[in-house]
Length: 133
Image 1 (cartoon, rainbow, N blue to C red):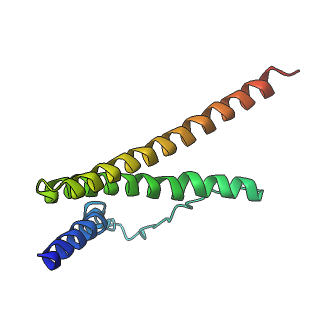
Image 2: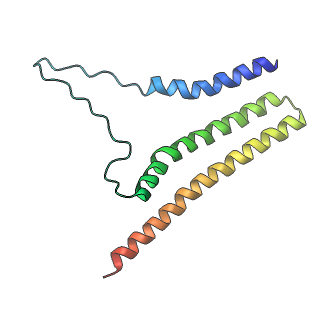
Image 3: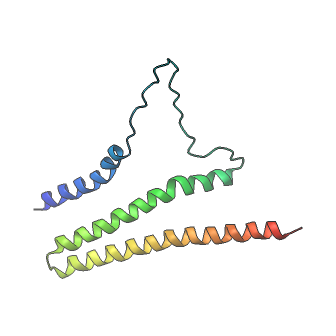
């Protein structure tokens, strides 16, 4: 039974990483009939123009780390729900599932708090810069 449980957990986690690849796939553009070449453009994930290390770090945190952390929180909440279902009334397993859910919600709160605090500080600094003569 443990092997079946491990396999189902691995398949569930793997599906979260594989299915979005197929969902986000875009069709290949058809070249026009007039013979002009099709232009492909890869957008810079850093959105260009960063001059300092601080700007690069902030951009990486906002565009790479935060989305990955948000997906990890969602996966962990789903995993906590899965452990609730597989607990089958065992008090120790239910306690573990409750702890998983609690700490995943704490992680979500930390992520939301970090974004909220950074926006408040950013807006405060922008308003101070605009109001000074």
